[in-house]
Image (cartoon, rainbow, N blue to C red; front, side):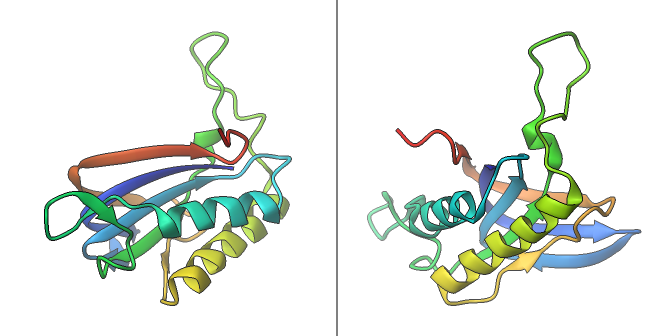
Length: 150
């Protein structure tokens, strides 16, 4: 499972020109599920995200997690995070899990983040054609892969 985490001043997901979800200060998390991912991958990344200290404390040092900072979280499914660009110029998505695997893991992951943060987490709509808007704060953008744990 891969995630791209962006610290945002605000972020939203629109579908057919209508805002589906909107958050203020917090994290926009894009999630790509691979064919061999499991709940363990989701739990690992949910824990990392919940504890990720990328918000400034009173001294201006990145020392607070999203909960301590009072931030919100928006999670959006994005299969293209599983793209392989090793050969040619057209990305291959063969590693991306089919919907029967990816939808339940996306929902499980979002629930795990919500449980760890003890607050609601906003979501995109799985499989929808979404327009994601954000104001990256910093900018701070971090990429994680559940298979790379060193």
